[in-house]
Length: 133
Image (cartoon, rainbow, N blue to C red):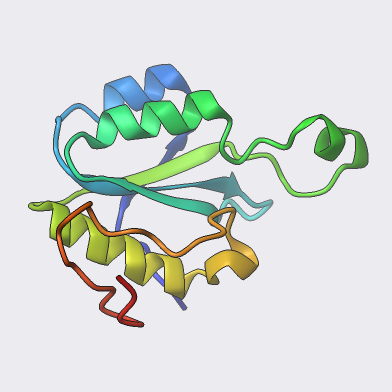
């Protein structure tokens, strides 16, 4: 079974994000929901190469994991209510972890991420799983 290797889950709330993700460092995050058994189910894998807290707040404000009007009317996917995160020592480490988690959790077939993670602009980094750049 895939493992995010992140802290959490925490409630997906702006105040909780601000209180939990306090360092302006690179890192990765996952947004998802807790199932009936309390297990965290991943819906989206994200990262930031400089400030994880800022990127997570942007994702929360954009409504990642929240269905649109059509989705709310039809029922569909569970609404995101939790997040996990981990800091990284470098932008490359954050990118590589995002890639590993993207592949491990079903890529665009299962995640809201429809495209493979992109490396930091001009870095030349390649995905450690599939070699994508």
